[in-house]
Length: 434
Image (cartoon, rainbow, N blue to C red):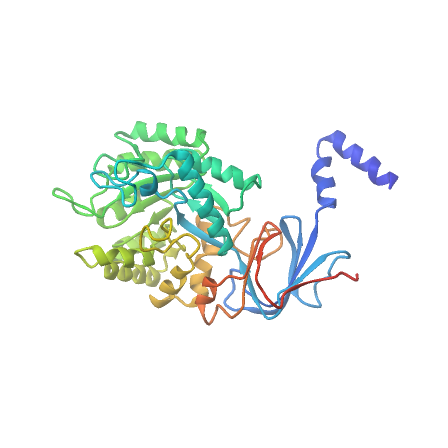
């Protein structure tokens, strides 16, 4: 129509016509589901309709109360349950030992003797891992350092639609102190070096800062759980990151490293194995998030000479009781047969472990949806099925509020309004007659 063309030209001339005109042509998709978990509630809602325009959710509510736009593509998931796409808080698409990383003084777990994967080859493997994660229902992932900037390229390639994968938050090169840590993390030996490296990593494309605060090893002077950095160094890194407007994730396994990282102001304590009443009290008061990686810890404990799995379970339960905000984290391993798992594409098993250790199914699911979104600073865009958020939606056959293992069998995956998987046998596109 002439008036639309004229208005379009005027908007283009003013500099914002492109987004308006694009919105007018955005495809509208409607999902019908028997049950819906919005990511925040304490129950499932029945007979729900979700209206999606382009990448975003336009409206959601009970069937009959939501107007379905004319010409919309309708997807009926039959008796299925829809949920927000899951969020993996501690992910390594580029698993360190698969490209010659390893821990100082240790042999990489799966590198071929005398060789290490090249960065291009590791990036191919990472792209495969990203696709596996997406297809299993994880539409968002936070990568806790690849040892370089290849994670930036992977994130950008996914965002540009070149390869399928979850939305990614990346750390580029992590930081560590001089005691121990993965070799591919940058060595920080002063507060000013820490501040400098925050700026370097952000310039290189990092979305947040990763610190390897450690604490699983003993130190003769400090005792169990000695941190890799001094408090002054860790505080400087955190302060500089917050000054630059980004969050800080600190891998602090145990003891002094946990308490120091909370005091330093880390936004999340990663892969915690051992905590105490005081540290979880501090974390709850400060709003510090915690992640655990319970499944992989239990598997790794089979080869340890101390009760790591039992300590991890007790620490998880202590944090849960104290009201600490716990985010779903799996820390999956790479290719099948290389280690014991869980593998990329199988991260849903962590939810059952969280339930086995004391969470309700919906608490566990919230840890990987709305709580997970808040943890990574994306509470305004993912983690819930509600108006204005990205249409990142997954579907399962049964009721995950009663059997959380349903999320190990995801059958429907949509990210940003685009369907990547639909295995519902009864599901069908409904020809629009409106």
